[in-house]
Image (cartoon, rainbow, N blue to C red):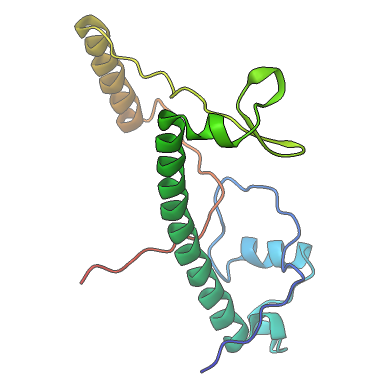
Length: 164
């Protein structure tokens, strides 16, 4: 089966993040669909946005984007490493003009390449770690006793590799 191009118009323009996504076909889901002007599958009318080809195309494109993201993240890491080495060698100072106020390097008329220090990483004393353990134990107790309240964020799709 060949994937069909995905429509450029979004199915859902905006949704308020519910505390929990309703189950497919439930009254809450049907109410949500009605609010968006979308008929449920049980209406018997074929909606091309939800055809098997459209769904397969959506899944195929999602998988492609996920793979591209991973490849881009790896390439970005390699480029950052290469620029770091060029910076340490002094090559950036030789080949790129200094940025505004001497900060970074100007790489385009309105774009600077800046080297930022790493984020602060804290190591705490043993007494602080003990307090953290006590807090986690208390949180666990409140979760199991019903004293703590729980809510869910918005649902989302995740693409994972299957481990055989």
